[in-house]
Image (cartoon, rainbow, N blue to C red; front, side, top):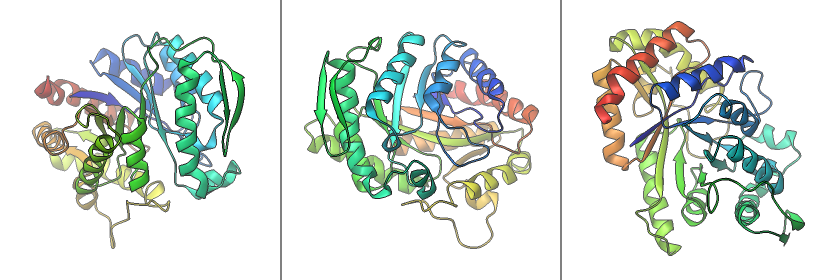
Amino acid sequence: MKFGLSPLQAGGDFEETIRECERAEASGFDSVWLGEHHNNRTLYPAPLIGLAAIAGRTRTVRLGTAVLLLPLYQPLAVAEEGAMVDVISAGRLILGVGAGYAPEEFAAFDVSLKERGSRMDEAVPLIQRLWTEDKVTHAGRHYRVTNASVYPRPVQRPRPPVWFGGWVDPAVRRAGRLGEAWLGGPSAKLDEVAACVRLFREARKEAGRDPGTGEVALMRYVFVAESVERARAIAGAAFIRAFEDTYFRWPHPIVKRPAGDLTIERLAADRIVLGDPETCIRQIERFQEELALGHLVFRVSAPGIPRDEAARSMNLLTRQVLPAFA
């Protein structure tokens, strides 16, 4: 199993985000990932621009978008910018895409929320063609390009891999049909993730693809401390606030806020890797065994967790947790 890091993506200090990625590479992480949100004072937009900056300060980690909200973009622009990130990074891009679900983000871009699925179905094959064909002409429901060529070409051959986020049946089936991997976000419980994994494998088989070759990846918040009690005390309130301000605020198709008072114990069950090193190892082993994970992406930082405590957690994660999976 490979391990990735989703670094701090809030607060306006992108230099700290880059430093976090540098530390992740030095600690042996396999990948780093940037997400995308809009109309938000703290969360960053434009993940491909961020990855271009990170590419100049790293050498080995894969660079992924988790996820780029593809329906908000013109596919030719994504193909060109993605190719540039792949060139700048010497072939390290993973294009993670998702349909999105937050109404205010679609309203800001004047894109119909109801069209997000059909836009995904049209945009992904078009980007794949733009990365592999010399001249592309396309006239579809949402997009038109005429004799389009993407230069420079991506370094990876035949093209960078495309990973899909998404929870609802059409989104997971789209991942199995068109993508190299399905990437589960940090908000769903384990049984919800497991159902998506089964559907992803089924969709690959129905599309005539080997169901055993598609990658399954998962993103989880993580905080490691000397004891379970200390981990909850330091990170509990920050994680609750992060979920309340994002996943539980939007009309998510799968993830719903638990009724009543939200405690870190209730929130962390199946959702967050939290506790002392041994507890965290057992939690990761459960994810690995029940989902046949190929890639686990951690979010170590969250607004409200002091930087020194996040650094301490990262140190425990890399020195006492991840070696158990070497």
